[in-house]
Image (cartoon, rainbow, N blue to C red; front, side):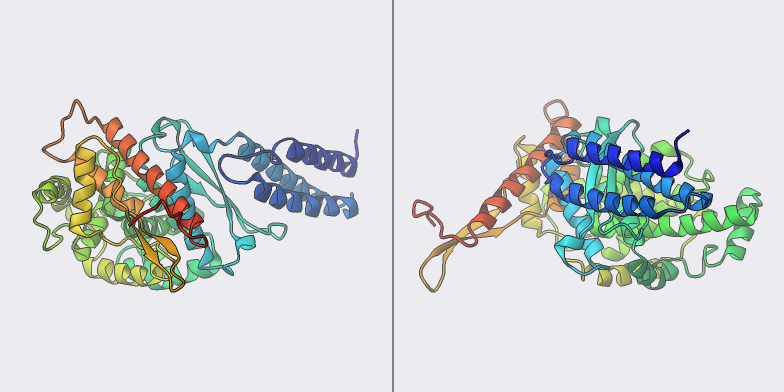
Length: 445
């Protein structure tokens, strides 16, 4: 039989060939060079360890073999992933948003930015952003964004990824500590999720469950993080997070109270999100009197509000005042992360987007103007549409009484929103190109 060193040395050479055959080629719309360099650096580190390993140290050999296996598996997943299986304009804005979150906890240098690759999977409930654990041989973390293949163009449902980006934030130790202290602990204060002993008593009372200590500790940590990620998803994605969230989760558990070791009961999460929504005043949105907006806003929010009002007291677990305090704290943290925090559009601007979608056209509502510098050179100034405003308008179009259900199907509205995001990205790219160059003379005011 082959010795462990010979076997692992040969496998490292196999992985090198795999890298040269795959990741040196283009990957989606992103440069594969970044993935190649990171994976090659990890491989070099592992190869160096194989060269000096003590072949009598079987536990160390096993650990090293597992690390080599994980690297090979990751390269294969990256190779097989296809950004084209997801709306790539949406993929790019999700990537940028996740990067803003990650940069909060690392030096804001591009060479330390994490890497994201997108892969499709079967089933409706596979949305995830899978973080990898930090390792000594990793220079940059690699995250796998997973989504349902059948939902390729369902961009209005992709807002659920806001929740998954919350898990990305928790993957970074320093940021996780701040989020735990200032947000999660505040959010869950006074609830059964303040301590494992309170959680244990609540499970016994509510579900007649008596978990082992390891299972109890695991469920306690998971449930706390899930509540946080729900609030995180709402604050970064805005109102469009809620109908997507509820559409998917209602199918997972129509009762809303089923026990899960990994997620808290859905009704309690609905209740928490409703309290946050009310505190943010997104339901009322004072001053909005456009019939184009008020009717679909009421049609979207009212059923959710009525449903939450019927949730039994045992499932209205979190205190509304604690939800408000946690929401305020999380907003303050998100303000440090570029444009991550959702900001409501002006009513007139949202009305313009909704009107475009109702007419069956993509929303091209960007305000472009040409200005002159002191040197009398002309430059383009771009006032882009936030992609989240497009998605919000998409949901309002779905709930709009004026929508022709035959002409404007759910699929078509999703495609119109997808094309609107694509057009905005094209405009952004064009204007960035001219930031350092004068506008051609044939571009007029």
